[in-house]
Image (cartoon, rainbow over all chains, first blue to last red):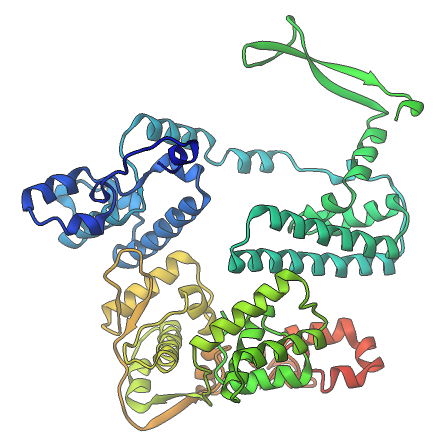
Length: 277
Length: 259
């Protein structure tokens, strides 16, 4: 509706009783109220949580809390409770499930989009986790082997903690202030610039700085954002050097062994000389 | 979430020592509450907080940090400043806790009771609901339990008739049912390590950290040697910063950087 208005289309607004539960309650005629309540569109469909992050957050919080309550009350989780045949459930269990479905913030009915969404979820459930366990990432491929002093490492480590804290503060302030994403990006850019300057004072050589930052970020389980924010160019350069100055990229090839969206591709190798870098 | 019993005193200490121990937002909130208690108005509180931020090395001119401060000033006006010296536990309540068979459950029940009493005081109502998450409650009780065991502990306490769950399916708060009036038998003065405070009544080796004042269990009680002076967190801080502390004794005062 609001999109139509923005386009200049005069749209007749939907009656509030069609989508608002409180307005629905004000209908005096009982039959109409019953009919409207059976078809009211007060919830966004399940798949829309992937479009609206706030809806996803609301849904996750709801399921997490309901699951906790289910575990406390019955000693089982909600999916297990749902698997119990209806006639075998106790009165309290049936009541719990009824209110769980009533109050759920998304509509999870068997529409085509929801079915597709569930299919995707099943397919990708634990996909990344399984892959990360399979392949242990060796971050030394991004290093150049430059040496540095312990003092420099300590100084960069403390800046790393400060940066992480400042990013958290900015995120909190954005939430409290309800500012938009552009302002958040701008604030993060400013922070990045300020920390770049601080780091260049500690270690003016970008090669050495990259080495320290990689050791600081990749030896901890926490975020690697700092190193990529500060010296992404140097990392790309190191990768290029470590790969023997070769770039590998996919090109369309009818006899290629990689198929993607109906086309075949093969990997080509290109050697870049010093002068071209 | 770390519950502070005497917010006024805590904020006063932060102001004197120019520190922000509980994160920027919470510290500013509590300091703002203190200023309101002292009789300042919103404009004056904003000015004083700006000054405090500068003293702590923050820049209130940056829009983000100013937004945090502004929000703290607004919020502080809505909520009263908590000034509690301790949470009194009455004799009938303690008897009920002591009657529970499992020792871990006793500590969890005590932590719940303290939490419910704190929030009753903070909100000015007699509803006896706990607000802290079960993770915080279990942590306060010095019990280490995973999600499933936490839930089974709650279920056991419910079966014993000591607590009740909320009716809403997604409300995880619980109501304490064994709050009874009577003679004070025991006072909880610190919400960190309530479980140890309870266990200390039955003996055992415990020590109070000289820096942050938290009660801790002496894990090396049977070993010979000097008794412990600092809790593990303070000891680690002291170990890694002793040079700086010796260099700037004025800055660190009595080494109160972690309290």
